[in-house]
Length: 287
Image (cartoon, rainbow, N blue to C red):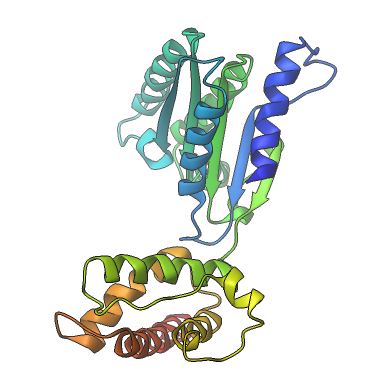
């Protein structure tokens, strides 16, 4: 997160100092890549919000434009090119307001470059390659403006062609959450369920930092927190999206009653993680 914030701060600073972009080039393009469900799109949105707040003294407001790559292609010949042109005209209008900081998010950017590869192979109409070229050209044009940042995400990095990869100043891998990250996700979910009295009565759970301070020593007060840590260790490799779903699945599949104690819920959550692991293995093995 810090790396991404520092990157945008430097782009603004270089623009302010009128650094010659022909001598030192930067494209205002960030590429976040990694497996699905790891929070790439959410991170882009959070980055846009954080920067809008941080640069509020300079820009009156922020504008966030989200583009789904699939929406740029039309089944009608030559219609796709018009869609791209129309879309970038609207983005250009936003950029023309120098009081606005504009973020353009292109989700699943591999769709664009995959279409170009397929066109070259002769399996897609030439219209598709024109769309991709048009998008890349338009991105090159809007990068000249100092109040725009282009954020892109990809699940399949090997599908992105070099023409786009070269345009990205930062190529950041976003992997599955760490053990500490998983614990924090579960902790926030359990706090919410206790607040809503689905888990009752309320029990104290320690943060990972507090457990580390206690050297993970087992006691009456740390028992449930250590159980949750063991579930977090067992959950390594699961995406953030899957982790957020697991408390719901635990209740639906293993609790089956309106209110439950924390001890019983942790047992159910552990079963749900095991079930998720089996499903994942079955999908990988094609069962």
